[in-house]
Image (cartoon, protein in one colour):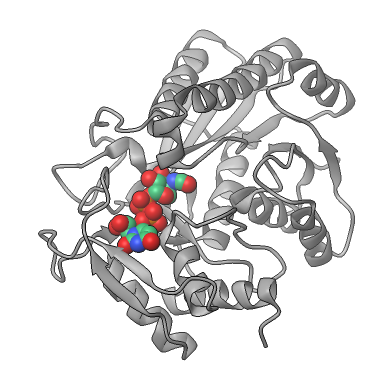
Length: 342
Ligand code: WQD
């Protein structure tokens, strides 16, 4: 029997590269496309080194529909995982059109070509950002979404709605949205990981760069929240565990197990960690110092959000497994690999 093939857009990115590895290890064939707008060819090299073989890769901008059409013409796949998107919340506030254009046009192109070529399954990268400042924690998939507070977050909500509408309207289309919490860490080989450009916006890349001496001091945004230690609570999900959630979702789609045309799953650990807990844990497990100072709140941050993962656990048969200590070790191993630190 021939293997199922999965098209992965944005497969050179942080989550895309880890998911590519996990899918191939699980026995799928992959076709990876990326335009390297926020990633590097070295990610593909890292993936191939881990797997010990070449993968099918094409440098394609998903906003270029004719270039994308060639991928659909060349390869037979039933499933698409669509990662390709911009993801900087702050930048989306100052450049909303860049976000709406890139994130929605690329997505529409994928959906239109799937319909045209009769390719049934799409897995969409959504985000816990859709929950906003939830009243009841942890959040379940039934927790009402809050109005988006950034154009980035709005593209995720709009894309979820488009998928829901398409799956309802088109008999041959099936969709899953995975709502990621806070992905962190790197592959245990330290051959792939997150590659932030410029000053990192996210906590863990800033922590690892500060430990490496690239940043002088980490700013902790807000210490007066109504949380046990005054800093924000998040659900930090290991990127390798997150990649495995994609494998479980693809299996569900390709084996005809979906109960509805469009399904949504939270992908987190179910356990909250504060910013301070994360920093001190990072220093403890890695034996490195991370100078930090408390500063004012960052605008747009919610005090706390973490996942109820019951649905993903029971329905996808998936559960986060890697310990936070191993995840934080892998984040530091990756930073050291990047900087050539022994
Ligand atoms: C985590 C906590 C910060 C940096 C965002 C997006 C989400 C997803 C992941 C995209 C917060 C604090 C951070 C720093 C700090 N999207 N922090 N000092 O904001 O929960 O989620 O990134 O890829 O959709 O909204 O993640 O890592 O930015 O922040 O104190 O230098 O760390 O205030 O409490 P966030 P984050």
